[in-house]
Length: 210
Image 1 (cartoon, helix red, strand yellow):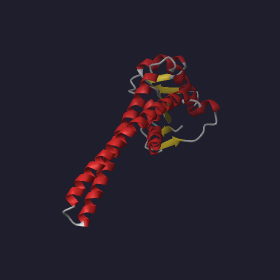
Image 2 (cartoon, rainbow, N blue to C red; image 1 turned 120 degrees about the vertical axis):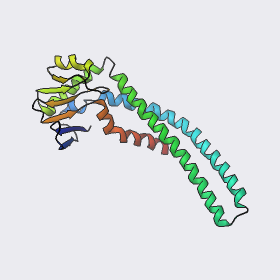
Image 3 (cartoon, one colour; image 1 turned 180 degrees about the horizontal axis):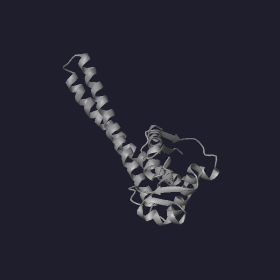
Image 4 (cartoon, rainbow, N blue to C red; image 1 turned 135 degrees about the horizontal axis):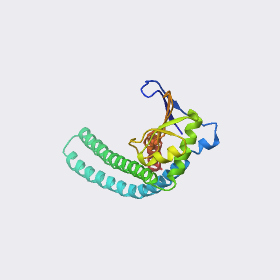
């Protein structure tokens, strides 16, 4: 999993932490969130497969309608004009399918964000937050400062993390830093979702092509 470390709060230099962590526990840090997201993705993709048939049927109906109209008009025009009209019909049909697919992908991505918000209110969220703290200590050291949501402040302090601000606007997670502010680790749910958004889009679209 990709996690971003920035040098200083306002420094323009940023380092992207990539690759496998040397700590086995760190590799499983956000597994619970990812597994839940993957299960929901499978459900959404199955739903998409059913709706795709409807979309394709509508596309074929539109192609046939436009083709029929194009043939009627092309009977009185040259072969070149007839070819142009048929090409325009096919292009229009492709646009219909593309627009429908894009709307469905966006709907699914928004649904996944809603699932993350639901998870941040669940009983198991506190254990994930503790895992995040352990992960941050392995990356940044034992002495941590964090920005978090108001509802997460007590838990972070009970784990020995100094809370610099509890006004963080996010779905869940926190932003950790060293006490001198030299290093920062963004583990907000929004940041983790941003990192994996293209992978989620690709997974949905690849199922469409199968």
